[in-house]
Amino acid sequence: MMWHPQLSLALSLAIQAMVTTAPATAASDYSQNDDREADVAMEHWIVPSEAACVVSLALSAVVLALGVALLRLQRQYLARLNQLEAESSSKQNDDYGSRVISNSPPALSQAVVPATSVSYQPYGKGARLTTVQASLNQWTSALDFMTDAQRADVAANVGSIDVTLSLQAAINSGKPLYLPPGTYLVRLLQHIELEGGATVCALIARAGMQLRGSGWESTIIKLKDGESTDRSPQFFNIIASNRAISGLRLSGLRFDINGQNNPISPDRAAGKYNHFNCSMLIVSGSIKMTGADASLSDSRITDCWVENSPGVTCIGTGQSNQPLTALGRNVEIAHCVFHNNGLDTDDHSTLYSTSRHQSEPQSHAPSESLTS
Image (cartoon, rainbow, N blue to C red; front, side, top):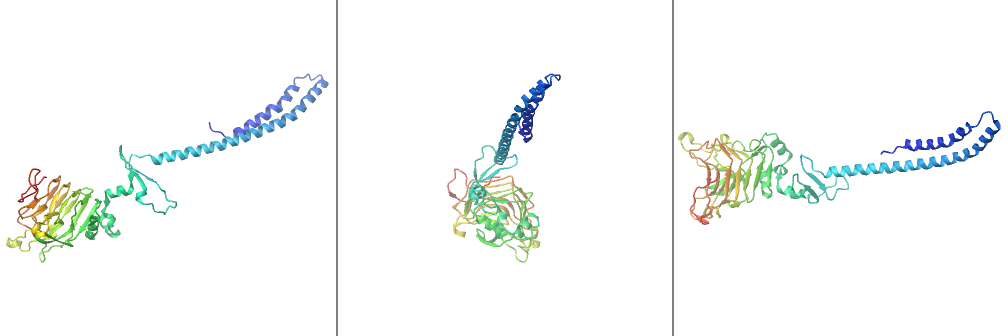
């Protein structure tokens, strides 16, 4: 029950009324014909009424004091109840996300709390408490390595600002990378020696490299116009490596190699074509040619779209022409689409992979093998 100050006042007035009305009621019971007896009766009751007034006032004061005390306790109770409800609400997961709990909240609103000091409870049954830093280490946005202008260009799907070196810096961080929706414009800024000789590429792969887009409809890596021309045709690839790498993951990405605007065969009219790879990914090399047997192992390329390659291969893994080359294993290429490729050559194979089966020895002559 809620206590109100009016209840204290009402009780006080009721006490006074009970005491002060008693003499009048008693006096009226005497016969109006006997004035003497009435006077005696009134005189008899007047004295007690004065004392009763004092008592009633004292009782009223006590009731008021109790009312004030109860009101104060009531307010404290309600404040505590609201506080508990707020704390309970802040600790509950809602249906749309996760909760973040600061183990050491900042004293000031502008204070910086290290991500290692902030606990993070992922949403979902059975999810374990972790830290914000540990969560960030799982997937890092590639946009974190870009300038504001680059981010705006990517988000607007304009593809007019080069982000090649920013993407390479993100890859070199060793963190799994998430590429939000947008168009990422790249250029052939890096040189790398492959089995077929000196080449150029946009990005150099490393062991454990993980790139995850938001889907091939929305995350696009596109080669800039004019990186290869009839005047200066380039032996190029988008992502390349000449080392043995494992743990590579590519998913949810569209690679637009833009062969319409990056030709490789200036003598095509005479029926002469260059056989440059022009892949979205190439892993190629041998000890004889590059100082190491290049191979790809324990890796997955899934849900990717590759289009508009002017060259001979869209994906090449472990490409080598040397015998007794150490080969990779366990490479999965699945749920991918290859569209409108081999635009400026007379020889094209969508996938070229040299790998070994489970029962085969570590080294043998290369053979074509793939999982798709």
